Length: 192
Image (cartoon, rainbow, N blue to C red):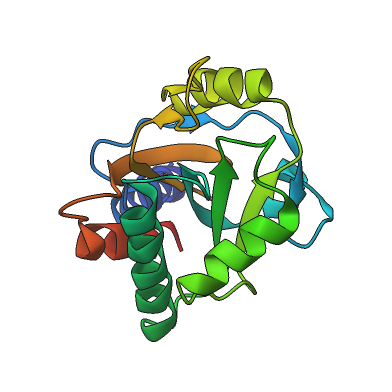
């Protein structure tokens, strides 16, 4: 009887200690990322399966953007460099074009290079319809994307989204002004 009681106490203690070791991201939303089919800046098919088990940071931009996308892309480049400098592995960066009829794979690749992006772990996506990206952004990332009938500027929000290796969006952050780089890096470390 004493042996059995000792075993139960030991088991409960192990469970308690293992639960204490798990760190969570404060305010995590845990929205599941829905599958997608796109074409990468390398003109190859790219989907959620290519990110399976990886930590990734996503945003929504377009190459003809007159205001928020240039600083967002520069900020993503800075974050990518910080991730590399911290020695963090298995982290990808993904930019969804919100203007897919204009943004060809080649145009996206050239755009990223203008900002010093390392395209080894940063993929820019196109190859879907305008209607598709508007619905996908809203249904998966809970973010607005809308191309007006007039003009060439697409309306979209300016967030960076952190996705865990479990395929769930953990958190969104400002990607335009006052980017919380240290918080994002800390949250990436928590997921590793």
